[in-house]
Image (cartoon, rainbow, N blue to C red; front, side):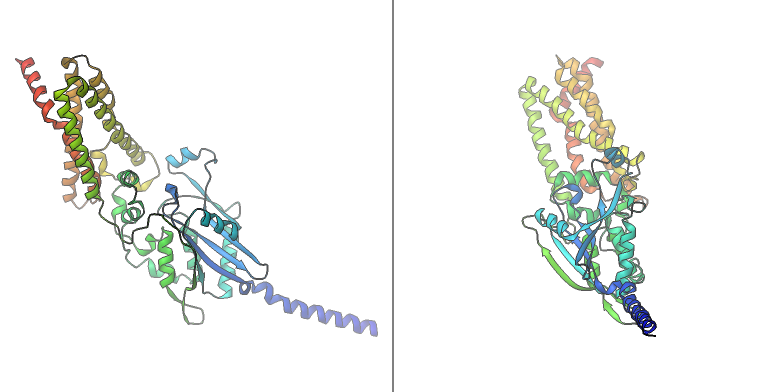
Length: 425
């Protein structure tokens, strides 16, 4: 009888233990804290727009894990070829939070943690989503700068946390700026990068967008989650973010502009300054024909290389890649691969032994730059039609003065027409 009672008591204790531990297994969310980690711009070009990730702290295990959705490696097979054609694979991964945070601090990048005020059930649901997203069969995705980058999975997580209220609110709210304006907020401090990146991107990024579309930028996600309120399952209105922890603030790094500034005045001043220098060199050519001939040929070749090279890449990206934000680009009217012809023509002009040998390449060079200037004017006129709205005044005003000077350089123009006239006679 005693043995039976002991066995009965053991069964009762085991049953009570199972009942006691069941909530701890099914209610794991009570041990979790979910945070959105936002990093500011870094040194490399692909870090200029910042980064975002998910941090999950587990009080039961003492672990803090960093779920990163923007992993890539230059060592991947055919990395640069896939990048060129717009087929770049990004990956998701998980590692310790402490190591990642230390890396961002060492890189002198802003780093802020936003703690989500959500129920234990939602925390557990987010944990399961995060765990599933880093599995080998799920971790890879095709990267898109505006539509599918490191912020995409974070937006899904925020939608899970709010039962779809986050997306529903922001997808119907007009955005503050266009995609191009957001890009320029981050590239303003580097004139060369700002010019070439915006030269290559077509008119589709100048359309009005929603606040949801703006959240391809981690900083826009941070802006919106700190302001957002949602209704929980009990009908209570709550702030999505309960705490903001500024872990590190960068020093000496270019700021991200709060509002985009007009870049065309800077490019126009630069172009006019270059044109004045070209005018001086043309004057030197008149005084010193030998020196002027060589320098003028080199100038034509250099501008052909810069603008023609940029035009070649733009042409390739517009018609042969999956970079859809480079499609429908009217900059091709004045910056295209045809400008590469100025390279051999300039060399031919510089190496000619007499003016008769220089006449043909000079005529062709002037024609190339004249067509460039005409292309700029056409790209301006066609925007009178509602079918064309590309914000490319910066590109137009950079190239127009230079093209006009190269096409109508007065000292050589008069000499060229005199020689053609005498030949005709």
